[in-house]
Length: 107
Image 1 (spheres, rainbow, N blue to C red):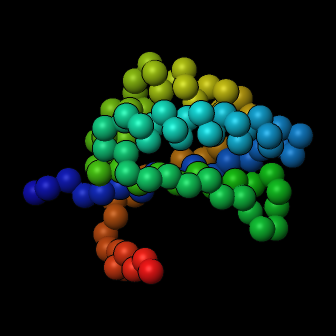
Image 2 (cartoon, rainbow, N blue to C red):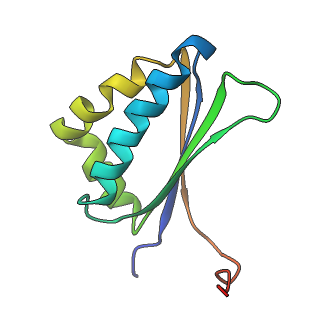
Image 3 (cartoon, rainbow, N blue to C red):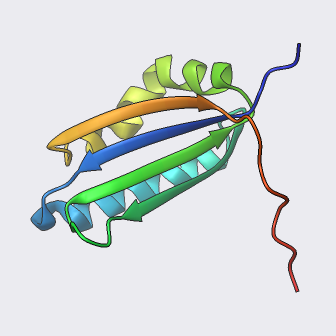
């Protein structure tokens, strides 16, 4: 059986005064991950439309094993520390991708 792609979801709270610091830390993490972490496919950061302190960070991976390997690495802990220091609450969920609609056509 081949590994399924995976989606990792973080639901976090960031106090409004720390928003800029959080987004700067996220930018540093996302570029480094996108440029070289095996199995990383895409990520997004989303802000709640009704609660300015509620954020959603999602990432897609070739497999859950790829994410878990990255998460266990010392580099991961050091890299995400500035972002995590902005959180007042955080929840993490992991999913195997079961089905997906076709990709958007460009043009």
